Image (cartoon, rainbow, N blue to C red; front, side, top):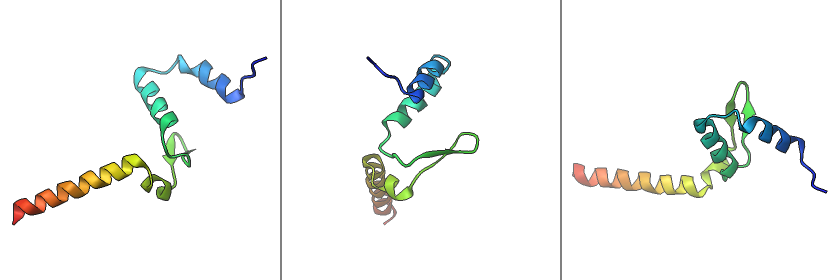
Length: 77
């Protein structure tokens, strides 16, 4: 016997009402490394900043940002 949680029932019920952009956002949230996120108010999201800083995506952006800054400093000199 297969059991379906209430959350899964809601997801499947409302999934067909989402447009393509909303589906992309939902999929990105589902696959996110950050698990501390919470919905606040009317659709706002909050998350633990320390957890965000540890994600691979943030680390890649941090590294790329540092490269851009270093490249800019070389051009100025």
